Amino acid sequence: MTETDKYKSRMLAKKAVMDKKIADANEERGVLILLKGNGKGKSSSAFGTMARSVGHGKKCAVIQFIKGRSETGEYKFFKDHPMIDWHVMGHGFTWETQDKQQDIEAAQKAWSVAQQLLQDDSYDMLVFDEMSYMFKYGYLDVEPVVAALKSRPKFQNVIITGRTMSVPLQDIADTISVVQDERHAFRLGVKAQKGIEY
Image 1: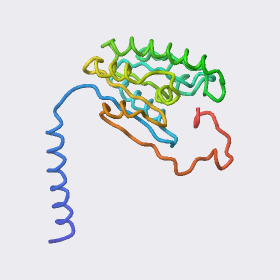
Image 2: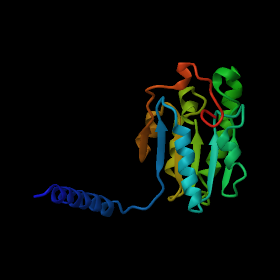
Image 3: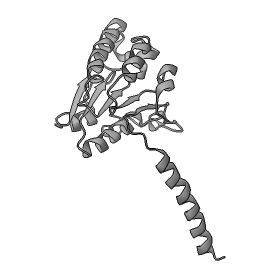
Image 4: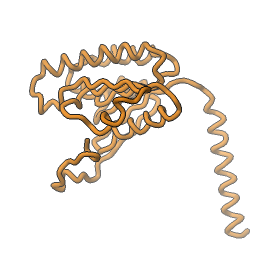
């Protein structure tokens, strides 16, 4: 058997495996995606997926639970898009605000908006950016969030970002991706810059 024949045989076998996996995945519904880990790119991944969704004519909404002190590039780009509702609910990172009560109130206000979105079947995708910190810092209880996620419209997709994810969220997630940090320019002394970090 020639190398070309061997390659073709391997690819035919791989195709058969992939075809079966595609045929077996016949359920149609929205998914819950968690993007976690201490590496850079969780929010960027979420907004990239949202852009893909908008490209297919789907209505989306974003709630930024922490970022809010300055306008991010993604906010400037997407804020006026007719298919996207954008809510900046935070007051900046917790070490900048240094006001726990203010942070709790902002989290609860953001969750109030999120609850409404999770009941609205006109939204195809929701991005809850940096929401995981709300549970880590005790600003929100995770159980009501889990209940709302489980009872959302059948075809609604939700993406939640943040370094750590509470176990109850991971228990109900369909997809969990971990972004690892092997190196970061900031630790090498490179200043955060527009278009890369924000």
